[in-house]
Length: 489
Image 1 (cartoon, rainbow, N blue to C red):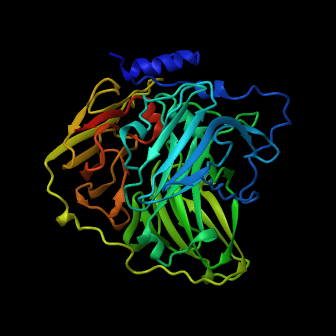
Image 2 (cartoon, helix red, strand yellow):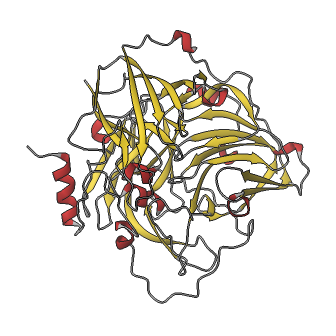
């Protein structure tokens, strides 16, 4: 019987790359660097520019190749490209269709989307639509890769409500570096409920991916596992940029696309962010958030009203998360440059969600412990319930249609983690024994878990049957083995 590990082994062998044992780190300037074009003559490297001297781009929106029979069909080539992240420097990146930052796909609930990816790299790839309820064959399982030169069509049924989702590479032991080098994109799923609300739309609805990076002396993205020196903050692929806005309301769909960094975001004038959505779509009510915390993979939609400020105002989105303020404290500046009519508003009620007391009774309560070596060894390993990821082992079996309680604990003393479940959106019931706060009261698929902390989740497995994974979405930790398989049957 052919195992998923042997399939990946064959694909890696075809690419001339070794298969790593479960939990082994990719290590050093790992495999993805080998896929990039050899550097020819270059200009002298430009240093990271001063803050707010480059403009933040808006990601490219893809158009379906065809839209027939109620299905939207896209084709993308996963390929190498160059991007001008630092002024005057061509930086080698990995892309979906040559786009850096990654492109945007617009989808609608109830209308399927098919995406055919061609692998133009010289290593295996897998594409995961993060936060989506999809058949297991289209989930982008870490071992379900397709080889260089091959193609794979992913079917997204969109049988779920609106949500700000994203897609990224998930080939095991390579996912951390692949995403770091650019393999991520945005998937905005909408429905009638969301469309009927008078929220900012069109050009005033802007996806923003935040992440960190480190550049070498040639202006290239430098990757080392667990690198603490990724101190250049990128917003939509540009270092600490500015973004020109009109004096009106905007909806910003924020994604933390970092491998490890936790952001704690606030506005320089002290105005709270108005959060309207989290991973799985709209909250019940808007929440005024003085500081918005996002761990890797988490999303939050916020509305900022610039009509309160005269033209000429400059507002800085700041970060008080881990790191030195002089290095990572500035994220993005909003420059108010014109007036504009604004028919949008933020209703006091956005959607209805059942209260925790009305959720389905759990059939099972489980404990999930996240941990990794923190004794200073050069190649730390990641564990779930004391075990390294083994793709041939099913760690958890759940009954289709059942609800469960998962108590997820970070047993480390110093290292932060977070937790992502494929296939489902869950409800966060408690954090540290206390009821979840309003920013986590909606539907979630990724949740931070700080050292010594436990989060209590209510999960219902009513999407599809099959094998899926759960893991730390600090992707360097996932690549170290902090991942497990669950089977819905």
